[in-house]
Image (cartoon, helix red, strand yellow):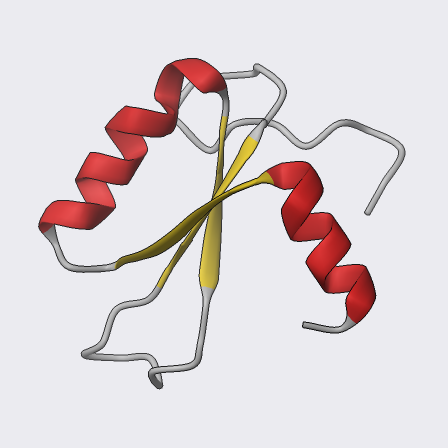
Length: 74
């Protein structure tokens, strides 16, 4: 990761990310594959709903927890 704070994935948003939305598209990704979007507090629910109605959303985790998992190798 760079020295810059990760920012929200919502279009036009420049706020610091607080959440990681882990998802996959079962039509094109293997079941264990996880793509990620980042979300600020304001956009977490909107982005979660967008992925959820498509059946793509797998997990919503605090960014700090996601980074801890990555450091632990899982």
